[in-house]
Image 1: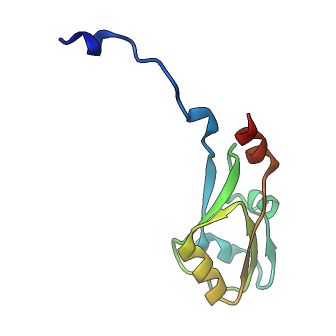
Image 2: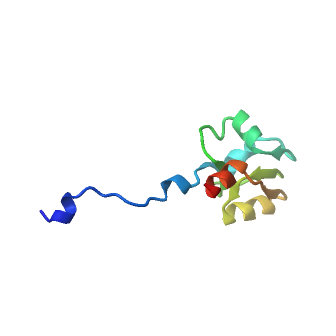
Image 3: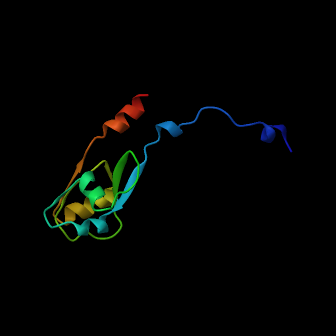
Length: 104
């Protein structure tokens, strides 16, 4: 076996700067009432975003049938189109935890 494969691998790693998001599908937002404001706290209370992460990202899996104002840390482009097609709106909220993490 070559010597380079026997030597332990060390060095720089970007793992501590990675941002972890909890994924929430658009179809799951149909659980909320029409015209509701859906924020991270409401998603956690409804059991849609459980876990420890830096933020919540809305993904475009499924269809949205209700007009909602969705507030999250990140959105996929297709999710924004689906939410706005249903008559709702998307608001990106900043997370101080992410900003502090990037400054370190």
